[in-house]
Image 1 (cartoon, rainbow, N blue to C red):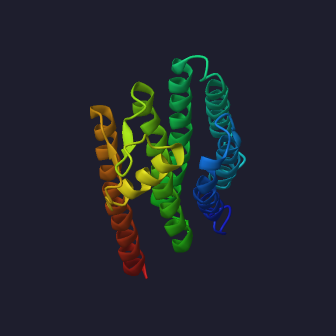
Image 2: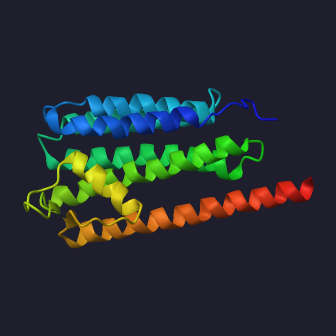
Length: 217
């Protein structure tokens, strides 16, 4: 029996939506401000906690270590570009832990109620958007103009990279931002491919479980 029959995925989805909404303020903050990072750690950490539970100490330790490492290297990023790269790696690791917890919850736990399973799928999809935004930073480390605004030719800001990540993930392709380097184009292609494959697998999983439930009843 499920230890918590409530909507365990709802906190993670709410946290992700708050992060998306807060991104509109990123362009108006000081460059050295780290509050979006702390917001990420708190909101998504709370969402992950509800999914894995208090008993999985290894997950909590690994997630906390990844976030602390990412923040620490991020604060040192102005002194050496290498630290920014290490910060991106640490954040990618934290995203991986969250994504694995979401996939396990909504794809493999048979006792999860259908609405919670759907919310978990939404949470995983949103995590992909945030993940690829962090990976775009790899390309901008090598070339600040890896992603540019078509109208002005200026480099994309962090909030614009987040916007581009979700637009690409949803295969909308407005064309207002473009990747200009080979690594940037490769990451953008993987971004769009992951969105299509994830939706296909998630929908197939929901249909399969619905058919199994009908056969059992």
